[in-house]
Image (cartoon, rainbow, N blue to C red; front, side, top):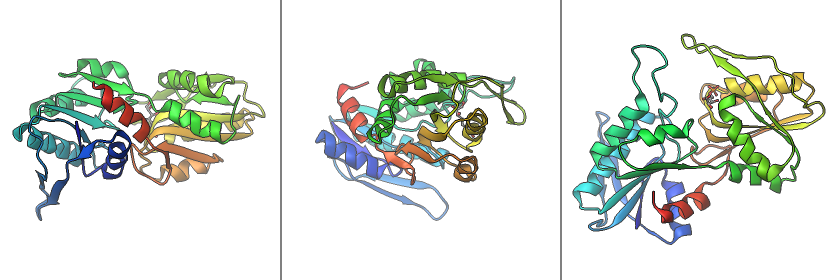
Amino acid sequence: MKIIPGPASEQLAGKIAELSGLKTVPLSCRTYPDGEFYVRLEAAVEGEEVAIVQTTSPPQDTRILQLALIADAARRNHAKRITAVVPYLAYARQDKMFLHGEAISIEAVARMLKAAGVDSLLTVNVHQEEVLRRFPFPARMVSAIPLLSEYFKRKGFEKVFTLAPDDGAQWLVEEAKTILGGESGYLEKKRDLQTGQLTMKEKQLNVCEKTVIIFDDVISTGGTIALAARAMFDHGANAVYVACVHPLLVGGAEKRIFETGVREIVGTDSVASHVSRVSLAPLLSKEIGKGV
Ligand code: R5P
């Protein structure tokens, strides 16, 4: 197998190749003055299995198209099998029609990748794992929650209160609890489908004088985490920390979260940012070897 480092994940792909002892296929990429993307493989892939490592955090549409064009190049140059390794899978949250007239965006993206030549996909913590079963090729996800939990364990956090900011994130804290111990709970979040306005249902959780770590898959605007952190302080928490797999951190998210009194935000390098203190490379290098 060879690794093709997509332009959105060059560093991560380099680390994965190093840890797994796999060769990389360098790309020649450029963007034309009118904005179109150009790509060329600079090494042979004929008869090879290849793993294209390309995250699809903002600018999502550009990065998805880049992934599709790289897959097309690999297919045309006779790669035997093409796996898309997509640490952050954009559009995964639009996995059904919430309102009449909508698209199911993630299914459209998956069909597009299939048409471009992708044979299978490996990703990390998608919002609802079931969505992957509707893909037109084998697709699976791995979880980065153990890596994030180990990060806190190394810092001496044990028997803390782990919190899911909504019921969809409950299994994340169950997973974290197996490493960190302690108690856990979840909040009930409601998002107005028209305005996007968030509200949290009032809930009694036993966090008084405790350290709380909030786990979530994605931080986008930070609205969810800010509301959850405020609820924890209102209930007497001593300190609140935040762990997320995909730190998109758009539109002043960090400021919004830190203003509540949160002490630290930790994310992975699925989306490279200054909070990406946990690398997915060890996990993905192991998983790539297993196939999809
Ligand atoms: C959805 O429920 C996800 O798990 C996240 O909680 C959500 O996408 C975070 O978005 P934001 O940071 O904008 O509240």
